[in-house]
Image (cartoon, rainbow, N blue to C red):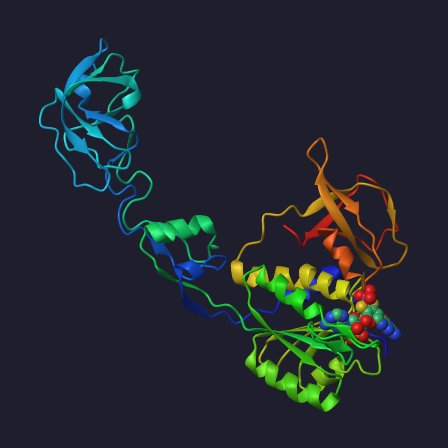
Length: 405
Ligand SMILES: Nc1nc2c(c(=O)[nH]1)N[C@H]1C(S)=C(S)[C@@H](COP(=O)(O)OP(=O)(O)OC[C@H]3O[C@@H](n4cnc5c(N)ncnc54)[C@H](O)[C@@H]3O)O[C@H]1N2
Ligand code: MOO
């Protein structure tokens, strides 16, 4: 029986209806990069926490800002990391260092570059429009104590790490990473460190899949299952109990040993679709277990697995875990005429660059088809050529899916 092939846009729609059961976990600050905050973060004090000196120089009182200049007796030195000093006389000054507390009684900072020192006196001949609070980062202007400084759902980048450290979070509550199993199927596959016999190949898909996931903050475990029906059934049942997401590669097309669709059916994993009107990756199978876990069974040809994981699995996972998407462009201009004469959406491997007017251009990098994984290293994205067109013109703008950022 022929499967009903569906459009790529319908794939997105079907997959988007599956929600990952999201838990939370506490992680150390240094492990939080790339994760999503599961709690609001409040400022534990004002930011800056005190009137902070912004230039090395002298702290004075603004009543001394004479257009003809002024000379000050140095009362002391206010260092960063030292308790606040007090300026005793308005006619005097205190030398102040960047990052130090502004001395009590001072309200202007004049940088050293505008001063001249003679003994214990400092002269400023031109105050250059300095006024009340010049060169002082005032207490609480950035954040007030108790303000929500980072919000639940926000992605943790290097910028958020700095903020978390500042407000004293050495541990933080984040969305828990899902447990993902990456499962290679096929008798022909041998381990990377083995020398394959003539009829064997080294397994690569599971490693590129695992790397794709890792690149996006998700750990996964790799399994290899051989093409034995009963064994597949037992193992897959166990894996579906143990993991939140199952990602298979291989074993889903029409071959005599492509057992997966039948095994899934017997295990009660409900098929949502089998077959997408696309190349590569046509035999893509997707289903949901009884306890609503997602099962992605990606076609085994390396470029097919690669395309399906980057085009469908990753955007879904990112949306589930991170609330937001990458800030990558979603369209690019084809830089030559290109033809694909089949009623299928074609995911063309391309290398992108910016032309002289700043447009993002996509240059086809054609290789040896869906088995040629080395070609993936020369390209950096897939350009999505829709099925309703055969001839695509230079300058046509089309959806793009980056896998190298
Ligand atoms: N009669 C039909 N035959 C095929 C169809 C079809 O529609 N009708 N579709 C073709 C397309 S398109 C693809 S893609 C493949 C997908 O087949 P499977 O998902 O069943 O994958 P396998 O047959 O197991 O493997 C295909 C190919 O990929 C190699 N492979 C598999 N796993 C790995 C791995 N982990 N690392 C590296 N390489 C892997 C495998 O050795 C095969 O060469 O079916 C077509 N056939
Ligand atoms: O379309 Mo399959 O995914 O090329 O070999």
